[in-house]
Length: 82
Image 1 (cartoon, one colour):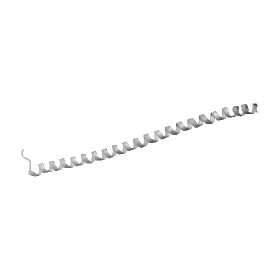
Image 2: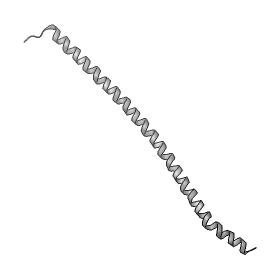
Image 3: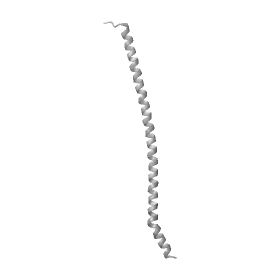
Image 4: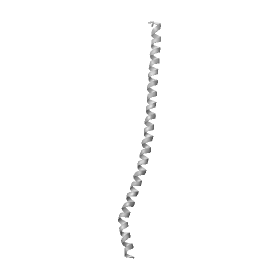
């Protein structure tokens, strides 16, 4: 069974189109992965900053509580010794 001269060329052109489409899909996928990696980096930095702020709030809260409880007692202690 002999094929016409044009059918080999058509098959070749089809292969080239498929290759180009696959290359385009791969490029889009790579850009998407780079965007995801960038988002993960930003979210990780935001998480770390939030953790630092959380620790600062805990420390500040602890200091305020200490001052509320110990402050009046210390004032009374000083008043007794005057």
